[in-house]
Length: 81
Image (cartoon, rainbow, N blue to C red; front, side):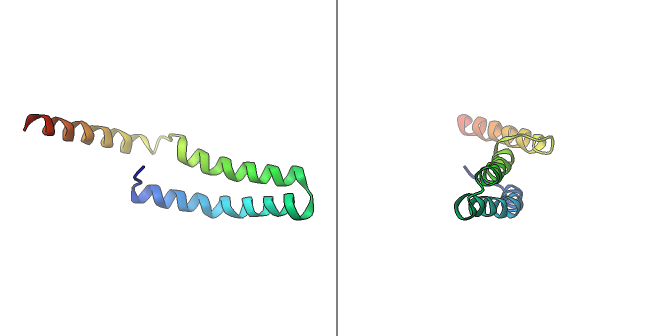
């Protein structure tokens, strides 16, 4: 799926926070033997990325409407000629 520039920046910002949590969770889980804390941190990191990717926020609505409108206009032009 193609991403816009702002989508990539948003994903990058999310990864800045999610990756350290995931690495710390893996260290707790695999090195220190703190299973509950490790699993919790890995789950939090995965949820951070999943929410950013799949949850639609009010800020996303105008861009979604614009993309659908442009898509419909582009499709109707192709059918006419």
